[in-house]
Length: 245
Image 1 (cartoon, rainbow, N blue to C red):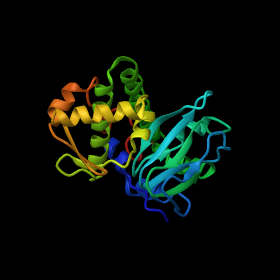
Image 2 (image 1 turned 135 degrees about the vertical axis):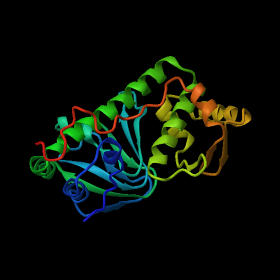
Image 3 (image 1 turned 120 degrees about the vertical axis):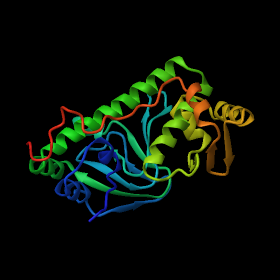
């Protein structure tokens, strides 16, 4: 049984032991996907969502002219492909950035879990709003901020998400994203990404050592970011408590 990390759920609410057990065990046996391997292609039939048990992956949409827009960088503990649940065919392509361990959750099994533990449906709704808020921030930053501000926002977002799973040490974390991938996330060319990273290094705001990056002055970086950090409300009053459904 895959041991799915429940970080995102623990951030939102207090889980009962039964709910946690149901979430951890709802996936199929884990699959190993090699670096740069395709997990699921755009326009493939949709019959499952995916739990990212370990690793980094991207979700991307291919535009009519052939350009790739990466709409999400996934890290350990993320649920992938949830937007496509409302479609017959997938809206995006999932690709492993690093070696990934994943588990598919057939939609019919997800239905059974939600029937048995209806409060988890409320938590999934809450998680969807967290993702929607993140996309709102991305759209706002892409449309109204400089390349420097976009890069800072992305680095802070990754820092904060990785910190929640214990993958940050004194501002340092692994960043296995190439300049091409970063460009497709930020809507920039690889050359512009390289120029922006060098600028941040000259300012003393970041330092790079291979695939490892260190954020120097996080308070100053937060002042540069065009958007404030978002803090998820824990156990909101509208969320049914254990045993209330």
